[in-house]
Image (cartoon, rainbow, N blue to C red; front, top):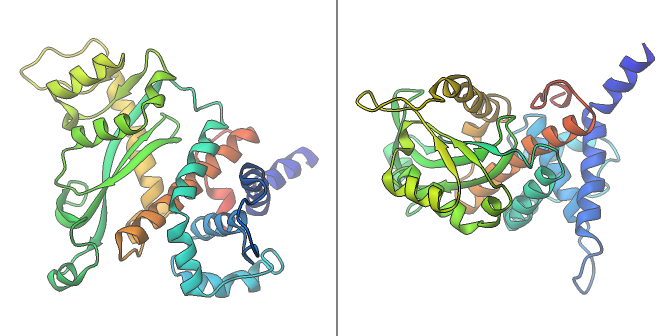
Length: 305
């Protein structure tokens, strides 16, 4: 019984947040800025942001009222809703770096198989909302196959391992070709491909392109995707079906447990911050589950209450 209790303690929300805060604080080190330090440190800000997502509190104002009552003393200082929102938007580069730092601190980071896919990030539905949105120029209309409807917003292009660990990601206009986004993302972070000789990327039919095939071949990467009916099936075609279910389950985790579709962002900076916040929460859960030897790598059950 004691072993079971110890295992439970290692996987509760407080333990995850404590480990995450220490990891971020160690990574950031002593602040280089001159002058008075902020009352809420960057490590506290990101830990607070992860806790908000894992507990499913979408409203920032409600979250800042929730914390003192349910986690008294955990955060000595809390800003107002406006200040918290501004700090999160300003911390987008840091959010992105921490996603990479946590991912690279797991044994999954060196996996030589990746899965790539994109999923809608709806930002508006009615025409008047679209016309007055601050996302004009960034967002656009696209089609959501899972809901069989058109949407207005962005698409999240996610590259992850089969276990669901985010490797790299991007937000783009839905009208931009998935293949072009993938090449742009890999161009921007060339070190990812150089670190993994013999890399295999699994994708769906949307990534059929001679240009993409040439690009990946030139970089020593193999791409496996479903074949069209008039083409000879790939010898490893049978591997795709279960793997496709994996990427769909990763998207389901982001949508159902981390409320990806209910992000609440109204500007490009705001949407980016909200999506990065959710990806950091997912990465942190996977990082902690691997560190504590949990049987289900992507499980969030221990952290959502």
